[in-house]
Amino acid sequence: MYHIKSKILLLQNKIRLTMNDNFFKFASTVTGAIIAYIEPTLAYIVIGMILIIIDNITAFQANKRVKKKFPDRVKDAKYKSVKGMKTIRKVFVFSVLILVVFSIEKYIISSFSSFPFTAIVSAIYCFVEGVSILENYNTANDNPSKFVELLHKVVVDKSERYFDIDLDNDGKIGKKEE
Image (tube, rainbow, N blue to C red):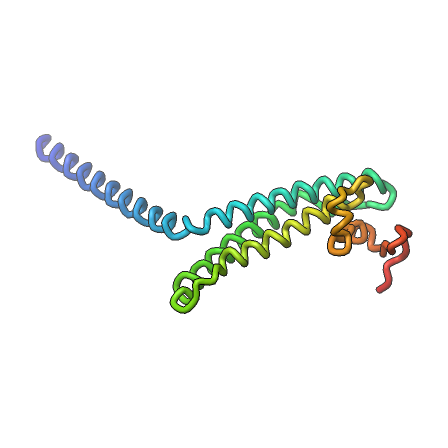
């Protein structure tokens, strides 16, 4: 009786090891396939993620500068920890966008064109993030960089958003018209 139970236990362990081994092989294969598919886009995704993180850091710094410069006007911080979820969503949307554009470029457009759509879409997104970083840097900054001053026609001062006011070219503050 004991001999039969031990054989059954050995057989159960062998089956369990085989199932675990097969699951590990399957999981490894799926993971390898996913990595191989997204590998050509990783550079674009990493660059975009770095810019998104820098944008959030500069937004936080701009928020601190505005609160310090205008403590009586700023009731509530525009940058809150809730924005962290927005950042995660932004990274996810950017990653999916790059993967979709890469798939379209690889499987649909590559048959008749070799135009680098993935690189173009990534460059446009990085430009938008770069402008946002410059806007954050320019917001309530007493010493804006010369580069920001040159691009001031494109780069806006986000102080208007903080106070719901208009800043005219002379630096005078007026009520925002609705």
